Length: 531
Image (cartoon, rainbow, N blue to C red; front, side, top):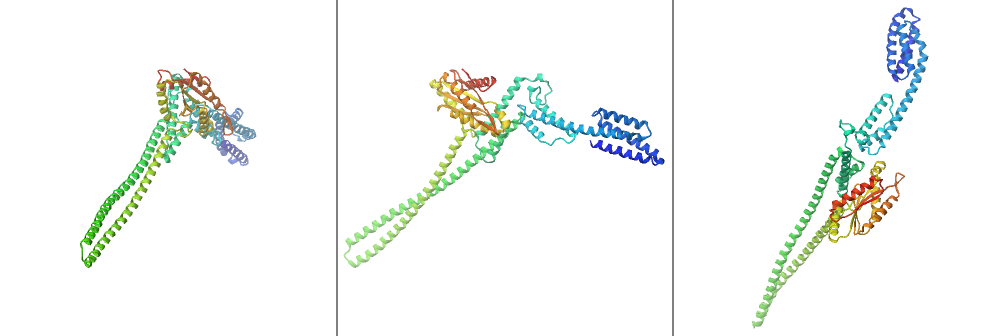
């Protein structure tokens, strides 16, 4: 557009120079040759810029070029000015309209692509950034945006074989894509993502490790590309190792502290024991000496006939007895000090006992957390594995009926995509609470991973399986979910089975999973039982 304006100004300037040259015949020939060449170049450039946008403008510019080349009198081009000005103005308005129209098409096409189910999360984020950009200023910018949008469509086709694309990097046509293989890969990808989420929710690391694991879980909820999954698995493994090291370090520090405390108590106790033995020995000697002095005094009193000599002897003996009593007082003081020292030892032992008890409580709490899903507060997969083994042994021993059901939230990924993973977490909490409220005391509920729950129903008759499961389905369907001021109805699909005589736990689980698949493939929001 700027080139057209520049050329228009140049044509007007040429016309003014031609008019002035008519008043000065001596310079007219030289100027005409120069201006004729310049005008021919300008009009040719203008014709190339505008070619194909307006047929009338193309014809008028071609006529102008012919007149310039055929006539020496360049004043003839002035007759084109008004007509070209009108065409330029009309052409400018057409360009503005076309630019706005193209902008609308790009925006609506981008939003339509963004709404496609199953679009890779990374591509969806790129589309969001693309649509938030300022509209193109020129047709050149608009062309670049259109090419970028076409590239996004191409990426979507590459990642969606059902739309006719092939996997990235493939040179084969659509016929070479094996649908069954693609479905298996998709299910494997989903299962790995679910297992990673389950693993993270079962871990209870604090600090930087806990924060990083939480971010990984958020990324998994949003969705990750298959080629990103290996590095994410390695990252989770590294964080688990780092968290284990920190916990081991904390445990070692506690054990070192406990060992030092016990070592100090042990040294004090040994010292007190040694002192106690020494005091006991001294007291025994003191008692013996006192007894010996008293016996000697008595014997001397009985045998002496000289009162003055007896008096002097008694005084001497009393002084010796007083020294013995003084030693006993010192021993009593040592005993008192020893008792005080033993009291301190007892206090330290009590503190060590309390510290050990507190650490034991922390270990028990940590063990409890290992079996509780931190998000939904129901049992997790580790607890399910332990309980399933127990119920299986009881079933084998006592022969009562044992039922298993897998409950899966319908279209859960669309909730995360449309309302964010915080809304998905909220839905999982509410549904888990609703499931718990509709269970028997003997039933066992666990979050298996992602949006799946597993229910064990011991001692239930075959005729009684459908009613409670259908009641669960109806209860969840009636829950009043609201996200971003929008009412949303959430349903679940359920697949169930009863253990058969030759079953292993995995046999029953696969049968229940097949029942769940049939519930989903037949329209969802259903209960299906395979006997």
